[in-house]
Length: 233
Image (tube, rainbow, N blue to C red; front, top):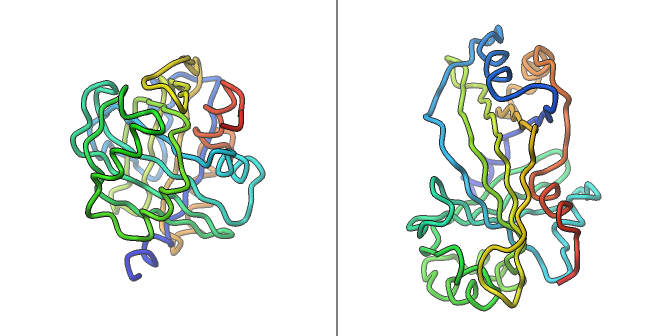
């Protein structure tokens, strides 16, 4: 419970950039008076999003419901290589407070493990999942895959972190078929996220105001689903 409370203090602000490319955005971040510097090497981030058969998570996020959740399995680097150490994540939002719960997840292979049946088989191998996580997964199915290139920056004191995401690509899934199907690339879009703890909310206002970007609450998951149409499964 202490870990959940600590994670609940984390806030983020998202910026949707279409007028600038990654290099221009990186230059703006580098010139910010908060002195953002590279904190981790760039890498590819891959996500398998999970949702109910009636797309309840998508609808809650689209509507901005005060209590909502996103569920995903995340891994890094090559999308189609066997993911040996993926992580199951639940991003939970209640009012203005959000937190993320993370759990080790069994290895999975893009292709055979992306159908509803294939994913259920992977879940059965997850012996270490706590009952609450297993109960949530029982109502969920693979809904979307996305990947993007991410760069990481932080202030010298570590209070504020920025990520820059581009080359966003989405893949549609079919519940009864394995593998990736339709593919869509979000050309000309860069997503910037400012992340910080709740204790620094007042200072975050000043930090965010120095970015010439458009603030957004749209999630990558919602955007990806909308590429292919939000169809009840």
